[in-house]
Length: 177
Image (cartoon, rainbow, N blue to C red; front, side, top):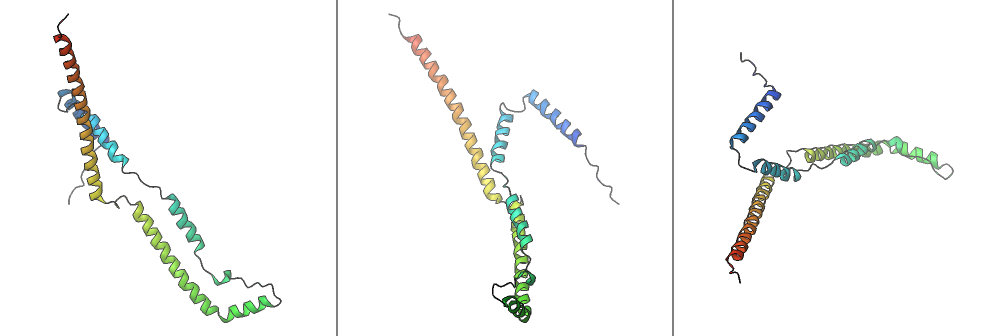
């Protein structure tokens, strides 16, 4: 019989990872700015993964559950005319089977619709319900954009440094009069 695998102590694993990262940081294994780049990358990804709030939809479905009970007893037989209530009750008794048949069909439909609405809400809330290919493409585009922005900032800084050097050289090469 196979023995169950030991569950690693999460605190120990985290401590070992932190020690390894710190050791590699001190040794220069990580390029300058790596942690900031990773943090920026994570922030960009998280910004596009917002989870919508479905509490309003769930509340509406719950309200529908309460209202979706059809009963022939809820059909009123009152009347403003003399003897009208007696006539309405008599007609209701005569067509009770047909009325109940219609109400049963409507109830069946309402129950099915509540199931469908609940399923739609479940699938919308399910984090697996994403278009992974589009999310991956968006992540890749955002990453390329971030790289381009970093390169542009570096190029701007290099250009400013070159302009300053040219100005120094021009100033130093101007003959004194």
